[in-house]
Length: 445
Ligand code: SAM
Image (cartoon, rainbow, N blue to C red; front, side):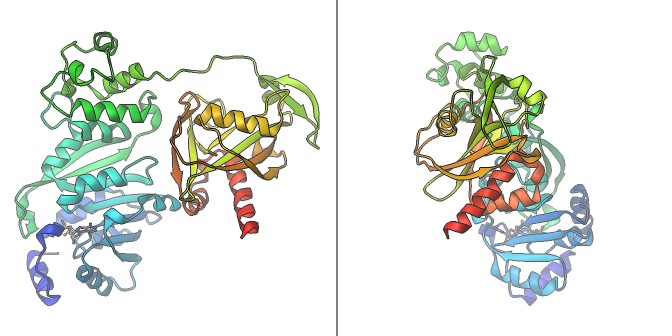
C-alpha cells in the first residue's frame, strides 16, 4: 500500500494507529514485495503472518499462491482484512499472537513464518514461537534494528548476548537489510531491519544438554562486565580448568565466547556420557512370540530375527504426552521423535520388567504402568513384538542424554496432526504405537 492509501484506508475504517500495538504500517510496496520474495514461497507452503495490519505483506504472500494464516490482535484491522481479501486462501484470526500455540503448526507439512512484528512483543514472541521442535522451515521477520542486530550478533560485539547465543544454537541467522523509519506510517522512533532465520540441522553443532547451556548463558551474560569465572563460581567451581578445556583466557567475559565454546562449556559442566558398548542379548521369539533362544543384538538385527520391545507413554496431569527425540548417536532412527521411553526386552526379562527398567534408565522416573496394547511383529515395527504401556507422572524428568537428544510434553491432538503431516519426523515403531494408543483411548471413551 502507498502512503496515501494507508491514510485514506485508516480514515475510512476509523482507526488511528495505536502505539502500544506497534502499529507502524509499511508504505513501501517494493520493499513489501522484496520481503515476501525472501521467504521463497511455493504454492504448497502454509504461511503464518503475525500482525498483518492493513495487509501490506499479505497481498504479496497471497500472490504466490500459498495458504495464509494471519494473526491480528486489533479486531478492527482483522475485520477490514476479512472484507478486503474475500475469496483468498487466507484465514484471518483475531487473536493475540502471544497466546497462540505455535506447536499446533506441526500439523502442517511445510510452514514459514513472516511478519513485520509489533516491536514491544518481539523478544517474548521469538522465545515463545521459536522453541524446539520448530514447525517452521524458514522465518523472515522485520524487527527493531537493535533487536535484529542482537539476534545475528557475533562474539566480541556489543549486541552479542544471551538472546544471540540461545537463538543461534537453534537457527542460522542472517541480517538481510536495514529499513529506515521513514518507510512506515506513522514513523517509529527507530530504524528496523529484516532477519532470516533457518532452523539448523541438529548435527551442525556438537550435542549438549540444552538446559545447561541456556542456564550458563543467562547467568554468564547477567552482568556483562564481570568475569565468567566469578559469575559461574557455583556452576563451574573448577573454572580455570574449564577455561583451558574450552580454549578461553581465565579472565574471559561472556561476550568473548563463541557459540561452540558455550556448547563446550555446557559439556564440561555436564558431559554426555556415552553408554559403554556391552554385548546385549535379546530373546529371539517365534511368530507366536514364544521364546526360542537368546542371541546377541547384532545378530538379531542383521538377520531380522523376531524379538521384543516395550514402548511407554507418560502423561502429565494436563493430559499431555512426553515424547523423546532420539539421540544422534542411535544406530536406528537417530534424531526421530519417539515414545516417552522405549527399548528392547533383554534376555531373561519379561515385558513389564523391561518397561520399568527403560523408564528408569531413560527418564529417571518410577511410576505405575498399565499395558494398553500389543502389536504383532512386522516390517513397520522392525520385526519387533511390541507391548505398549502408559503411566502418569507429575514431576521433573532426568533425560539420559546418551540416548535422548531432547524431550517435551505435547497435547495428544498435536501429536496426531504432526504424525499425519510429517511422518518422517518419527521413528516408525512410534507411529504404530500412537495408532494403538488412539484406538485404546477411543475404546475407553
Ligand atoms: N504487517 C503490517 C505492515 O507491515 O504494514 C503491520 C505491521 S505493524 C508493525 C504490527 C501489527 O501487529 C499491527 O497490525 C498490530 O495491530 C499487530 N499486533 C500488535 N500486537 C499484536 C499481537 N500481540 N498479536 C498479533 N498482532 C499484533
